[in-house]
Amino acid sequence: RRRVRTHHLREYKQRGEPWPMLTSYDTYTARIFDQAGIPVLLVGDSAANNVYGYESSLPITVEEMLPLVRAVVGAVEHALVVVDLPFGSYQASPEEAVHTAVRFMKAGAHAVKLEGGARYAAHVDALVAAGIPVMGHIGFTPQSEHGLGGYRVQARGDRAEELLADARALQDAGAFAVVLEMVSAAAAKRVTAELAIPTVGIGAGPDCDGQVLVWTDMAGLNTGHTARFVKRYAELGDILARAADSFATEVRDGKFPAPEHSFD
Ligand code: KIV
Ligand code: NA
Image (cartoon, rainbow, N blue to C red; front, side, top):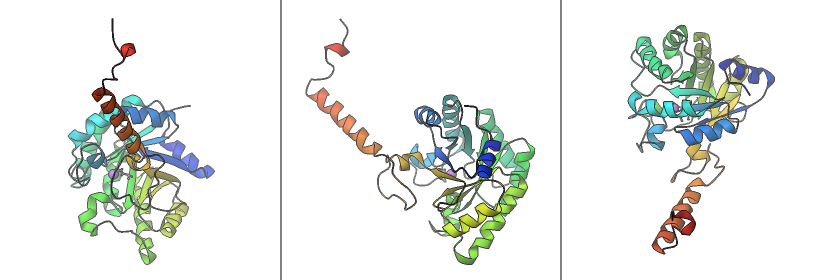
């Protein structure tokens, strides 16, 4: 297999082949997902919750994300590695967006993602002019949680027009794909049909070109509330808890280490 490039994703769309995308923040998951044939890995700002334990994605900084980017990039052979521009690192101006994205590209990223529609078209345009591929992200955008009034499904009913206009603005600015998060399935279907670039859904129904999940959600590592749009494909949290418990029990019982784990 070859290295995945942005034009391959457009080819999947033209052939009507749905494709998977997962987040990754470290070397082990990056290698495993790459070898499993996941074509796109996202070093998401969801690392805020999943690596650093913050309550939202807002606090994470470029400095906190750079080491994760290096780890993921260093572990993949085929996957396209997309990196989120974190909150506060690009909104102020297209120049700020280019400055931040260049730092991630120098760390080995293949593309960046930013949140926002038509109002960020100039940012996307500046990034593309700098040779940096951009993935858009519209619908529910977690960095704007407080502006949007909480976690709410977007683009229901006649609000679908607005979503379509935002998606078109991103496409016209040169974005290679666009994430649709927590939008009505009907709106996502319409945007997917009308765009030439691929859509990637998360809580956006079955008709998007690609589907993305946060890896800790899909592998069952998180605890507490699981969003409706998440499917848990494993219960890794339970598996790890059992491993830790077995280790602890064997140490306490004097069963580990055994002779075969020891040196003469
Ligand atoms: O940060 C993230 O994990 C994301 C995906 C949910 C698309 O932006
Ligand atoms: Na994100």
